[in-house]
Amino acid sequence: MFRTSLIILSSLASLFASAAAAQPAALACSGSLFDPTASAPSTKTVTLALGPPVSIDTGNGPQRASVVSNNKIQLRFRTKDFTGEYFHYTGDLFLIYRSGHLARLTCSR
Image 1 (cartoon, rainbow, N blue to C red):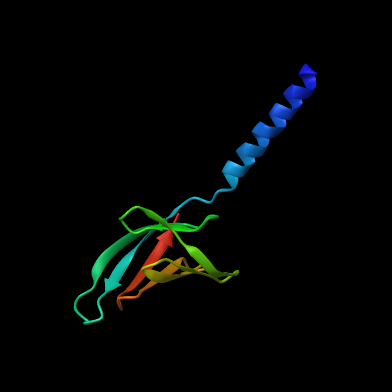
Image 2: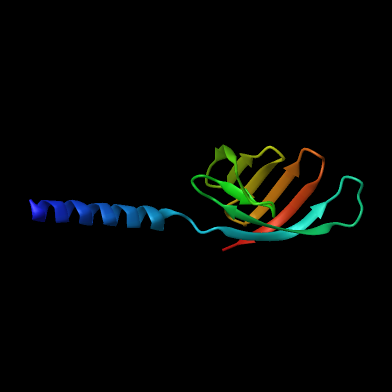
């Protein structure tokens, strides 16, 4: 009985450890935010967690994003304020705001 319990606990511990290791690290992204009036761009820094679940922190705390599509080339996601497009190969991130602003960022681990 004791041996069986020990084996089960060991298996559960290993399962939780592998699940935690499967979580990808958050990406640090920095770049420019462009205004629709074409004034000078401002700097923008965000943190993107590729999940699951996908979340993004634009400086106001992390917010969960709903995935629109995800393939080998591009991850497209949506929040209440913007649509995001992250390109896996290049690390480019574009945030297209409903207000008309556009952020172009480069992400790295």
